[in-house]
Image (cartoon, rainbow, N blue to C red; front, side, top):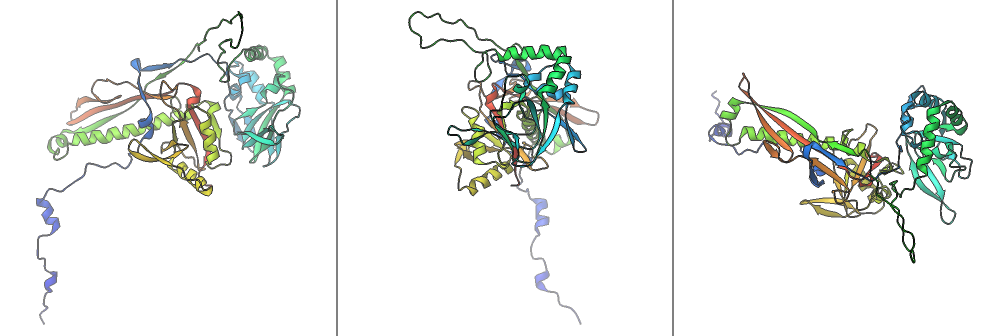
Amino acid sequence: MTQVENPQSQQMSLGTAAARNLATTTKSVPQMQGITPRWLLRVLPWVQAEGGTYRVNRRLTYAIGDGLVSFTSSAGRVQVVPPELRELALLHDLDDDETLAALAGRFEQQEFEPGDLIIQRGGHADRLVLMAHGKADKIGQGEYGADTVLDTIGEGEYFGEQALTGLRDEWSFSIKAKTPCITLSLSRQDFDRITEQSDKLRAHLEYFVSLRGKRSNAKGEAEIELSSGHEGEALLPATFVDYELSPREYELSVTQTVLRIHTRVADLYNQPMNQTEQQLRLTVEALRERQEYEMINNRQIGLLHNADLKQRIPTRTGPPTPDDMDELISRRRKTQFILAHPKAIAAFGRECNSRGIYPNTKELDGKIVRTWRNIPLLPCDKIPVSETGRTSIIAMRTGEKNQGVIGLHHAGLPDELEPGLNVRFMGVNEKAIMSYLVSAYYSVAVMVPDALGILESVELGR
């Protein structure tokens, strides 16, 4: 029996696969998934750095030390790293490693549970305490006698150094553990014993006490003597404005790569899109992404590492609450921008939703962004998230005239493609491959300490 073919199975017209051989497809330019908004590069005002260096001159300040202390742990025993004791204002720049090692060996470890009192207000102030692990509330007395939380003490912070020098006789605050805490304490008796054995430490303490006697304003800057409200012919004070003797200089950093393109590709495959232009476009995008990453994370110039320690605050309960954000922006005048990882913005949104708060939005550079207190809250995925789900939130004021944060570049480079970025032809090698050197020069400077603030230990999973 002969099988009859189904007419519907026969091809009735030219297939698309064959037709594409004779047609020009409509195509996009090469796409790149790694392109982000790069808000930091967009909102920073850029300042020309002639000679590749920018110097930030400031008034002389007597604020010394005030750093975070690092620790090591082994088999449940925590020890302070001796050189890290120089982060204390009391021991800043002490050039005596043996004395520091002796002091580090005298610290005693203590452990506290949430709710335990580490320090009792009104008690005898007789020791220096380092917070090796955990968080604790610094509690003072309010105007009407009720307790009030003055601050949150985090890992690496310390209190009580004035007790070692006799400048404080009793505690004016209490310290209560919020989480399980480990502290290291150094008694005044042990400190005095080591001081008697070290000539360098005694001389250093005399210098420290002399600095404490100098007059300074609320920011620690040398006071400018003035007179006001007087009558008649009062003798007016004479004064001058002192400057830092060693101001910080920011040198431009560079991010570079060599782009290679075969001459055959550049010669034959340039229609309808120029291959060299597309290769260069994507390379520049990658350089700008790396530039923003370095401006946030680089240990020399990055914002996360160059914020003043007095401008770093931990969250009170873990997640980023409206209270934490208010505390962050209150540390500086005219906070203009807040940068946060997208996950941190989502966590902040959850906290707002739980309180029935709905932040406003505004248009910035043609985009609709969320705001807090009318300050744009901008996403930045270059801010790292730790394995434990913690991150940071950056708040800043920008501009030279505002004494804020500024970007640095050098416009007018040879073979410049964009301000601060140039492309130099390096020639063709024996394999007919063309090479282009692509370079981006940049840095970021903080004019005064309160221009930049960091909300640390932001928990995303709660």
